[in-house]
Image 1 (cartoon, rainbow, N blue to C red):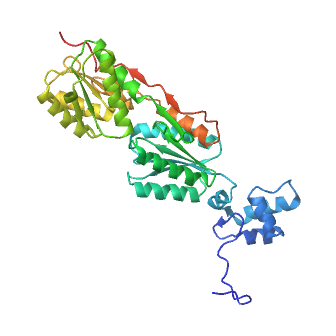
Image 2 (cartoon, rainbow, N blue to C red; image 1 turned 90 degrees about the vertical axis):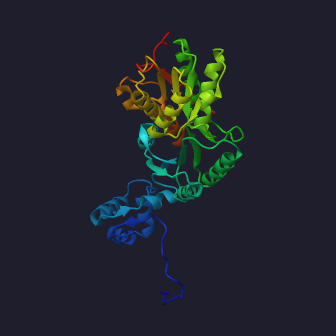
Image 3 (cartoon, helix red, strand yellow; image 1 turned 30 degrees about the vertical axis):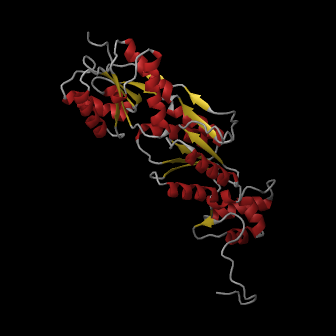
Length: 360
């Protein structure tokens, strides 16, 4: 429908904070007896002083039930901006703890906090970053393992440039820094050192045939934790045996099946280090099914320190990662805190009942 006076199409939007519900900005201005520009400035928080007209606008908005459109305000560069937590999947307490740390900081500083998943689909991930930039997000926390190599660096650079156009930043959480892109913040924890300490713990208990159950793929987490396994053997002078590295998906069923294969092919194994606690649960289940006592015959170590593993029988020795601290520190940077370079927080070996001295 055209404007009968000008022949131009009608305006579909107007400057100023939009509202939801029945009341419009024009309604508020009319009731307050001010111009729409004045009403817009007051409701957007840009008006100075506390004049009578200011008070009338607020009173009129309340009387009419006018609700400011927060998304419209953020896209204008005012109001509360959001911080997005983006991962391929959203499962388990590890992500929940990291998200909780970031959300605590975001909400304490007046920001909205949103969680998004991509399902591992790179096209979906790229589209999500574009959408978040259009909505004037303050920061994107990209969470979890990623493929190693140049492809991810190129992708991260594109994301960083897209976000920078709206004054936002990309922050890597639980992922090592990109050497060629030092402007992209990275908050990580010590995957490699954590697994190394687990292997050294077993060696200190007399174990020499120590297996590793993990994804063994080319993602950052998998690679770093497997390198930690190799480090632990090397630093104590034990020659690594690649046949003791058993591939498993990150499910207890996959790990249980992998363990049955391991026991059949390497009956002399006395210690098993797992890439995750989820895998360790499957390993323990397979050992119980094979009537092998833990730790009297085989000691088991996990990684993550999920809450449930302390309640297993026996309780699981594992590596505790500072997930909440990673999220909290990333959140501080997202709300404007100083970033002085990559951060790698320490992990900690938690010794429980699933490890013990090797049987002589």
